[in-house]
Image (cartoon, rainbow, N blue to C red; front, side):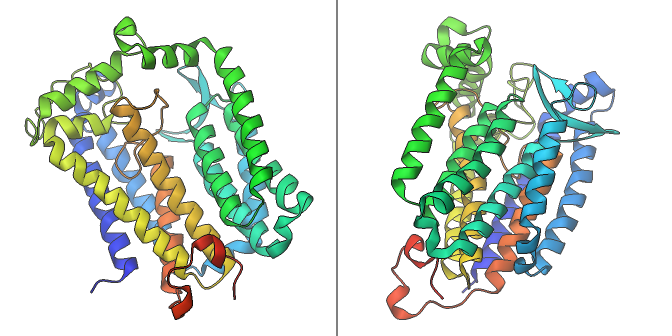
Length: 379
């Protein structure tokens, strides 16, 4: 019987392989037009994959306890980078958002590092404070301030999708870590209220929501990608039109190699393969939960749970956007969509998960059916 770390790595390798294949299929037309090189995006992704694989390998070898003393430093660096990317002339502005640093032909998105830094700091803080997290200042004010700093900086870019992702994952980690539900509920209500007000005052985001509610009315503008993504799934049927034979990638889906790559999977490889991708992410989630459940200490449990949830929740949001269950968010599909910084941080997180899994302990009999939340501060 295969062990959890082996299954986890196999799932990631399958997703990475599918990502490279689909990137080769989807990116050639746009790359040829912009860079006069059909393989431009593919070659860039391969470079990022090599970098990400090296970082993931090192993270898998590094004892995850060594991340504990680095948690605060990582958080400060991530917050500074998020602040710097907002400065004109330093951060690159694309599509109305200032989210990237350009380094040669490579781009880096600091919000990706911030997601990892946030989970690292929350896991460190909650594990250090133990049962004191039930208190107001240590369990609510301090960790929620950490979450608020990252969320506000990402929100200012603006990147509403990543803000929602960080907020949801952060609150879940705090809940599992033992913070009182009442404190989290108040923060969630305040955060959602502020978020709603901001959306109502942002014409682009507001129109995306209106287009989500009435896609036909915005068929040539804000619903353009959504309607074409749905057409891609309809055209693909159960088994697809064949690899490389997509019609929708011919400018009907401008983000065919990034945020909407799942739609091209549905068109070229069919519903069966699309469901296979969903099952792979479900398998990743359950492997991560198993790793968290068996981690040897509170820090490992919380970190494994947070990393697992962040990656899986991002996949769920991306897929729900593509099939029309959520408004457009602009989040890539982990391991599959083109994007260097997302790939690097995702494989870093997988490496950390793998190292936690290697140090797992077998739970005693009376803990086998105990929720993670009740086991976090044991041992």
